[in-house]
Length: 330
Image 1: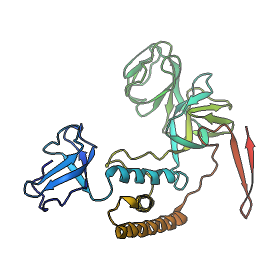
Image 2 (image 1 turned 45 degrees about the vertical axis):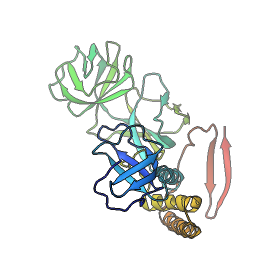
Image 3 (image 1 turned 120 degrees about the horizontal axis):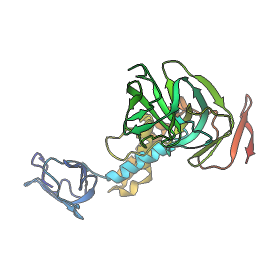
Image 4 (image 1 turned 180 degrees about the vertical axis):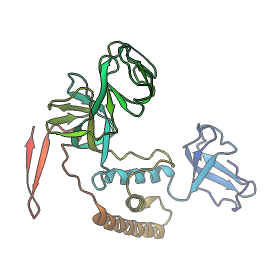
């Protein structure tokens, strides 16, 4: 790789790590990293081994790291994010599950870690019926005589028949047809639907008989076809896959915890004992900063049902003092 803007002398970048951040087409060698075996100051040329899987392009961007490869840095950051799962839970509400006819079991998004509450949101039903036909962005009911454009901004749910479980905002309507964003499954003459008025606040019904294992959630409460379920949950903090991706975990925690892992746990990668000692000292300092931040800002989980993948439900009691007991319900 040649960068004519470089000004360093021969061998300055030897044994460093050259990471290709981005390429013009998003293809290889984007994301690849190799060790620099030689740097020529006279020609501004980096030579690496082993070779990249494709040639570095004219407008590709890169980073050079002295002691730690990008893979180690990324791993340390993602380890810090994973550790933050119980320290900084990111409470989120999902209101995309439609109550299906005679169905009490629902598939959850794979990103959910813990469910706190499940509520049924009962909206005013503006209209309902069975479609006579459907297309990629529409649902038609020739038995209706809606006022043109009166349904814009409302939502339609399909709760039975073809396409059951879908929710879409209505962007246009005629007397017999509504227009929506593209369906996942086009409705047809078996599709039963409800049109809900989201401009009015729904009646919120807290559901109490809820269980889930893996991505399957089962509800034993009585449900109203075509209405919406609100799942209040803690999503899994996703790993960072690229430099541009962000995380809900606070920077102060992520950076310092990652520095601790990087500096304290891998000093053997440094070229001298003095650098290793300094790295370990910096790692301990980063640990202290992260811990102080955690103690001041930690959010605790509360009202959780039970963790994803578990088959045992745990309830905890607290008095004014420390935890005093647990109960397990299979």
